[in-house]
Amino acid sequence: MSRTVMAVLGVILALYVVFGLVLPALFGLFKFLIVLALVAFVVVAVVTVAGKFAK
Image 1 (tube, rainbow, N blue to C red):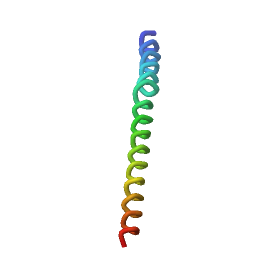
Image 2: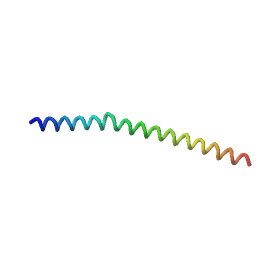
Image 3: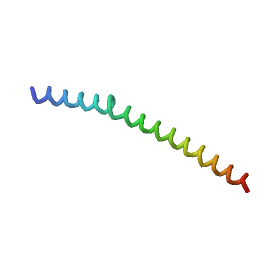
Image 4: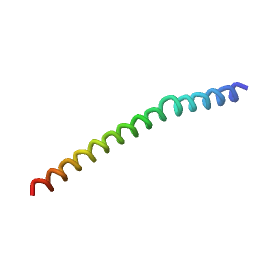
């Protein structure tokens, strides 16, 4: 009986860790990477346009 209870508690804890800690961290990292990529794109675009107008 206690083995079943501990297994259920383990599953609940695992679900809490996945949905409460891991997924929000991954989504936060994904949003950070998207913002970083957009900034890099803007910088490359500005440098490219400035280089073409300088000629």
